[in-house]
Structure formats: C-alpha cells, structure tokens
Length: 314
Ligand code: SF4
Ligand code: SF4
Image 1: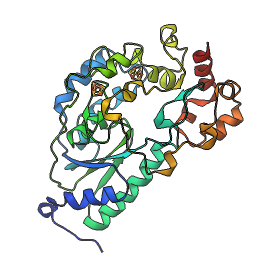
Image 2: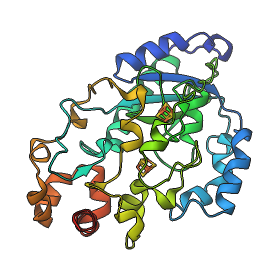
Image 3: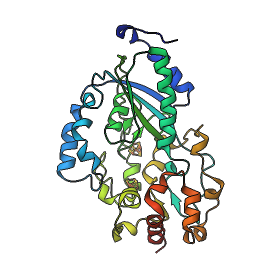
Image 4: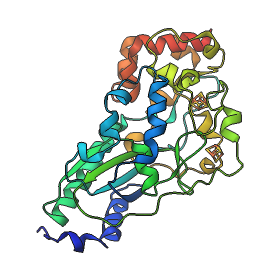
C-alpha cells in the first residue's frame, strides 16, 4: 500500500531508496537538487558555437531543456542518478580479431536500463505514492554526465567520462527527474590528480585538451556516428577497432579491476566470443542480424560496420 508521505518527511528517505536501487542491481544511486546547471552553460554554449557537436544535432536542439530540468518536468525538485555496470568476464578475445567497444558486446543498454529503471520507478511509486517521475537514458534532453557528477556517481575524468573510485567507468547512466523532495548528496570530486594515462593512450590526440573531447578526432565518433567516409588520418589509428574505442578507459587506473556485471543480457554471445578476423571480413548481412539484432551495433547497420571493418583491415 502506498505510504503518502509529505514532502518534508521525504528528506531522510535516501538510505531506503539507495538500498532498494542497489538491491535491484544498480551500481550506484545518487541524489541532486534539480537546479539549473548554470556552471556548464558557458561551456556548452561555446561548444555549440564552435560546432564541436558535429553530427550530434540533438545537443543543439535541446539546449535550453538541458540547461533547465523544469522545462522537462514542471515542478521537478530532485534528480536521481542510477548506474549499471557492463564489464563482462571473461572478456571477448581481442587478439587476431576486430574489436567492438565493451558497452556494445551484449544487448542494447537502452532497453535494459529502461526496463530496470521502470521497475525501480514502480517501487518508488508504491513506496511514496503521488510522485511524478520521468526517466532518461541517453536521451539528449538531459546533461546526464553533469547530473551523475552532481549526485556523486563519479567525477568527469580527463577522458571526459564519469569515473567512480571503486566502480571505474564501465557503467551506463540513467537519470530520473522527480517532484519528490530528496536530500542532495555531495557532488563527486576529481581524483585524476597528476595522471595522464588516457591522454597518452589516445592514438589520435582527441584528448589533447584534458577534460575536453575533440570529437572530430575520436575513433568512437567516427566508427559509430560518422555516416560518411572515415578520414584517412583517423583510419591510420584504428588498429583493430571497428565499433567504438575503449583505449582511454582501458588504461585508467580506476578500471584496473572492474566489477563484473550481474546483468546477463550484457554478456557477449558465444558467437561473438568466437569471431576471428576471417569471420569478420566474411560477415554476411544475415550473420550481422543474428549477432547484433539486440545490440547497439545494429544502429549503424551492416554497411557501415563493413565500412569500418574494411577501413581497419586496409
Ligand atoms: S575513445 Fe579512443 S579515440 Fe576517442 S578519446 Fe578515447 S582513446 Fe581517444
Ligand atoms: S586515465 Fe588518469 S587522467 Fe585519465 S580519466 Fe583515468 S584517472 Fe583521470
């Protein structure tokens, strides 16, 4: 039965909510006040002015919404961040094969995250009644990394990804906007210190300015988002990467011992585990559908994956 708790009384229920989130399999659950993120407005404005978003046009079209959560959910008071780990053990063998990014080796995280977040929302509604809650997974309408950082899920590292001291960075982020009044957590603090491992490991110089990603130089951008030909000076650095790139995460000291995921859907299929270079080069459209029918890779389609494979093998 719903406990119709008044707004004041909701402060202090963080521990109960967090405990339930962890019980449901999330790695971390953090809370922030839903105030406009003024501190990132300047950065985003200049980013867009310089057209650094390239083909990611949603960053431009949702700018004002991203800067004011009350335009997304009127009456919003709190933001809850949830993270879900995807590091799979044993990992897919990379030697003598082509490599797709770790996050894309299992089922599409959008679907899994949404399903898990909906279950969590049902629990919140059963527990707290009246709550209005809106969820976001990689939607573009919410600056997810900012809210993850603000709610203590991790700091934004020099590789621009959210890193948690114990959990590393191999996790997905989901954000809930709610009119429940919840006490905020402390924002995460930066623990990169003097480390520059990710900058040194990036083969294209996309992280030459620490904490800023030059998307035009990023292998991940070119193998996933770029619908045109991959520039020659990026192809030179592809190595065996054909979808995304984990180099700047693999070298991060906080990713030395990632906690294996507990989500079976994030585990790679046996077929993917057994792919060698010959199998990739001879991949048929039918095999693509079978391998990636439920994976984020399906979004780029067979032709673009083959473009990447040919570029990496050239
Ligand atoms: S994903 Fe790869 S190319 Fe992009 S910044 Fe990281 S290391 Fe560099
Ligand atoms: S590799 Fe080092 S500098 Fe880069 S994100 Fe990790 S801790 Fe920060």
